[in-house]
Image 1 (cartoon, rainbow, N blue to C red):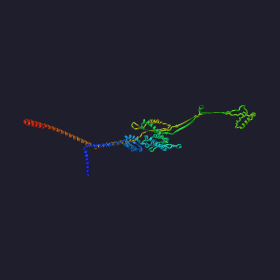
Image 2 (image 1 turned 180 degrees about the vertical axis):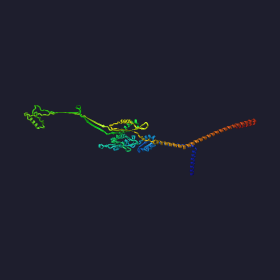
Image 3 (image 1 turned 60 degrees about the horizontal axis):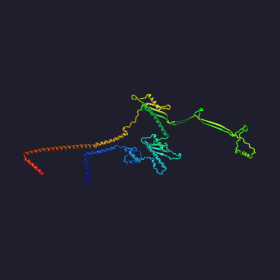
Image 4 (image 1 turned 135 degrees about the vertical axis):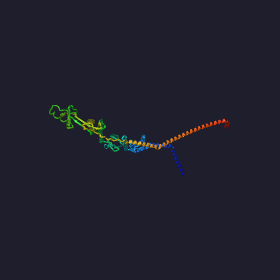
Length: 564
C-alpha cells in the first residue's frame, strides 16, 4: 500500500514536472500567463488608487435611527462608511439620491423629536394631564423641526414651561421658553436671525412674550438679549453704523485724490439716546374786549309777586303789615266759632271779615359772561439717537515725487482735503465737532503671506491621488520590464527562429523538388539517348542481320498473342 502511494506521488510529481517542462518549452504559454498576471495586478492597483467618491447620506442622527439606516443599507447591499470627524454615514455619490428616496419611503430616519403625530397615538380615556403633556411635547418637537430648517442650525432643542391656567389674576403665571442651538462649525447667527427665532417661538405659544424666550448656543453663550441689554446693543450697533457710514463717505471722497491705499479714516460719534418729552402751557394777557371770544354766557331773571295786594288810600291801616293767613289746622277754634255762628240763624250778626292778606313782590336779574383765556400749549418730544458731537481723524500718505521718493503734501492740498472732509461730515462749530488731518509716511504693513500651494489641503489631496496613480504606473512598468518583456522578447525570438527554420525547410523542400525535377529530366534525357542508341543499334543490326530482327519480332508477336 505504501509502495502504491509512493508510486502515485512520484507519478504526480513527474506529471507536474512534465507540465512545467512543456510550459517552459512553449514560451507562448509563459507570455500569456505573465501578461494575464500583470494585467490583473494593474487592474487591482487601479481600483485601489481610484478612491470611491463618498458623500454624506445622513449626519447628526440618533443611534436608534443610525442603526435602522445601517440595517437597511446592508439589506440593499449598498457600501457605506462612517466619517471620523462627525460620525456621519457616507455612501457612494452615484447612489445617494436613490438611497435617500428608498429610505424616506420606509420612514427613515424618524428623527429624535416628535411632532403633532404624537397626538395621533393617543388612546381613549387619556387623562387631561397626559393630554397636556403630549401637546407640550408635540409643540416642542414641531418648533425644534422648524428651527432646524435654518441654514446655520445643525440641531435644536426647545423646552417650554407652560403653567397651569388659573381663574385668579394674582395666581396667573406667564409661560417661558428656552432654546439650545447646535450650530454648524464656522457658522453663526446674527442678531436679526436670533430675533426671528425669538418671535417665531413667542408667536407659536399662546401668552408667551418675546422677553421670556432664552436662546443659548452649544458653547453655553447667551444669544438672546432682553430689556436694557437689548437696548444697549441696539444703540451700540446704531453708533457703529453711523461711524462706518461717515468713514465710508470720507474714504470715497478722498480716494480719487490720494488713492484708496493712501488714506485712513477713523470717526467717533457721540450720540444722545436720552428720551426728551416736554409739555408747556403759556398764558398771554387778554386782548381787547371786542376781539375776545366768548366761552360761555349765563343769564338769570327772577320775579316774585302776590295776590290780593293792598290797595286804596294810603293810610295807617294800609301801611300795616298783613296778618298771616290762618288755616283750620293752625286755628281750629276760630273755625269752630264760625260754624256755630252760621248755625245760629240769619238773625245773628255777621262776623267781622279778616283783613286782606298782603304778598311781597321780589324781582331779580343776573347776567354772567365768560371769555376764553389766551394760552399756548406746547408738547415737545425729541427723537432718540441725536448726534451731539463728531470727531474725525484723517491720515494721508505722502505722494510719490518725480524721483520716486515720497513728498509731503503742500498747504493748499491739505486745506483742500480739510474742506472736503468738513463738507462730507457736516462740520458744525455749535455742535463742537473736531477734525484732524495728518500727512505722514505710511509704513509698509506686512500683509499676511498667502498659504503656499504645497501646503494647501486641496493640493495635498491632489498630490496624494497623483502619487497613487504614479505608483500604479511604476508597478505596471516593473511588471512589464521584469515579467512580461522577457517572455515577450523570448517569444519574439522563438517566432523569428521558427520562421527562419520554416523558411529553411521550405527552401530545402524547394531545392529537393528542383533536384528531383532535374534528376527526372536528366533520367528522361538519358533514357532518350539510350533509346536512340538502341534504336540506332537495332537499325544497324537490321541492316547487317535482318534474320535476327525478324526472329525477335516474331517472338514478340507470339508473346502478345499468348497473353491476349
